[in-house]
Amino acid sequence: MNTKERLQQALKAALRAKDERRKATLRTALAEIKNAEVERGRALTEDEVIAVLRKQIKMRRETLEAAERAGREDRAQEAREAIAILEAFLPQPLSSEELEALAQQVIEEVGAQSPRDMGKVMRELMPRLQGRASGSEASQVVRRLLQSR
Image 1 (cartoon, rainbow, N blue to C red):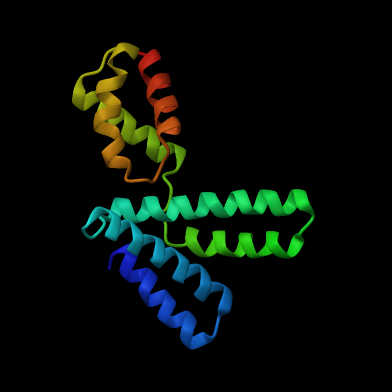
Image 2 (image 1 turned 90 degrees about the vertical axis):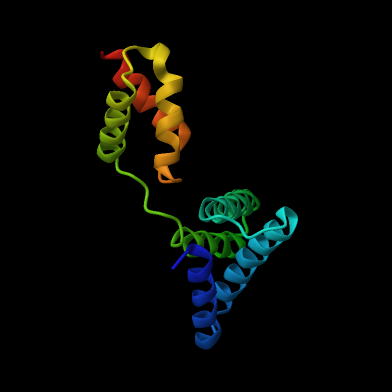
């Protein structure tokens, strides 16, 4: 079951449970996915759906920060709950050990010898991460591994 289908199933469950916060958060996320599909004129890929969810989480984090600065604990709590709901649908992040092992594997596959080969390594590595680690995290690991060669 892909992420969009999981979101739809979770929305149905929230409707049955009368969970207003979860229902509102999931409806907003599904509406943003639908808007992106209409904009592109096609169904979104799994990676694109994840990107929409990440964007929603980023917006909620900004709301959280603003609410905390304004002393609005009620709004801050709503944002925290929404973030937790959306994060449950993201792929589990790679541990630092898993990221390092994957980076080492790609370095060996492309035959990288020095930091000059970083571009080759990153081109191969990023699609394999599938949103489970940020580009900056991957870049730091690859740079460290290549410098130690």
